[in-house]
Image (spheres, rainbow, N blue to C red):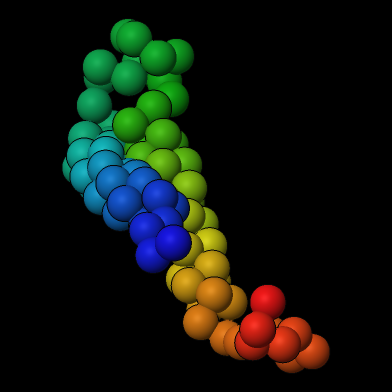
Length: 79
């Protein structure tokens, strides 16, 4: 059981979140947001949400691999 799906999901969401947040930050103040999204910079906010989700997945994947590597106390090796 060496494959953890949280790692590629975390990498993908972190990458896309960084790209979308950077694009939202670069286009801040553009009049397209006033016309199409009630003045809310949707790219920036969703980029930050995707970045947070991706980082959470990476953290959980790292924690899971660390817990899997540690032997549990009190269990015999002959299970």
